[in-house]
Length: 324
Image (cartoon, rainbow, N blue to C red):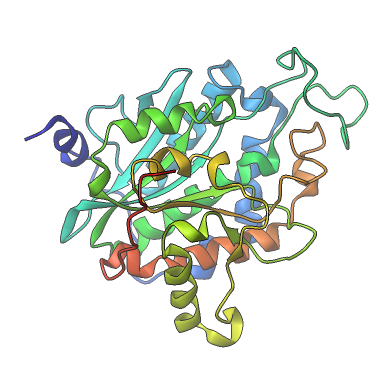
C-alpha cells in the first residue's frame, strides 16, 4: 500500500460515545447566530490577525481542531491528531470516511491565516479604512474567518447525517496569504486522481456590489459550476432558480487555495461572495460588525444542498486539463 493510501485511510478512532443525530434539520446547523459565534472567536483581537506561524494563528488552529473534534470528524493518521505540518504553521484536517467509496475524496476547505497586525505590515501594503482609532489588528472576519466558519458548520452537519459514500475531508489551510503555501503542501500529499472535487470557501460574509449571489471561480475549467447549480435547482427550483451560483466577474480562480489542486487536474474551485474590490479587503476594518450573517447562512446551506451528489457518489465533475 502506498504512503498516500496509508495516510488517507488509516483513520484514528475516537470514542464511540460521540453522539450523532439520525434525523437533523439542515437549517439548524447554519443559523446566522451559529456562524456569527464561530467568526467572533476566529476574528477576535486575541487571535492577533492569524499571521501564518504566529502564536495567534496557532491559537486559531487549536480552536478549529476542537470544533472538528466536537463535530465528530476524525483525525487522519500521519498527522499529529488534527494537525498537518505545513510550514509556516499547520493545516487543520478532519475526515469522515466514505461508506462505499472511501478512496474517493471530496474536500471542503478554507484558509484560516490572515495578515496579522500593523507590526507584520512592514511595507505598509494594507489599509486602515474602517479601522477604529488605535486599532492594530487585521482581524480578517470576512477574509477568511467566514470561510472557516462555513467549513466547521459543514463538518458538523455532514458528521451528523453520516450518509457520505465518498470520504469527506475538512481542511483549514495555513499560509494562503503567503502564496497558498499550506494548500500546496497538502495537495502534494495526495494522488490527484483520488480527489473528486475541492470546494474552497473564501470571503462569503459580504456581498459584492453587483450581486447578492455567491459566485464560483473558474467556471470554464470544469463542469462543477453546472453540477452544483443543477442540484440546487432540483432541491428547490423556486428558491434557487437555475443559476444561484453565478460566474466569477473578478478573475479570482488563481488567487485562493483551490488553485493548488487545479494545477494537478483536480476540479477545484472557490465559492465566494465578495470581490477583490471590497473596501475592507486586507483592511483594519474587516471586522465582525461588517458581515452579513444571513447571507453567510444562505450560502452555506446552498453549499450543503448542492454537494449532495458529490458526497453520495453520483456526481463526478470533469477533470481540469493541466495547462493552466
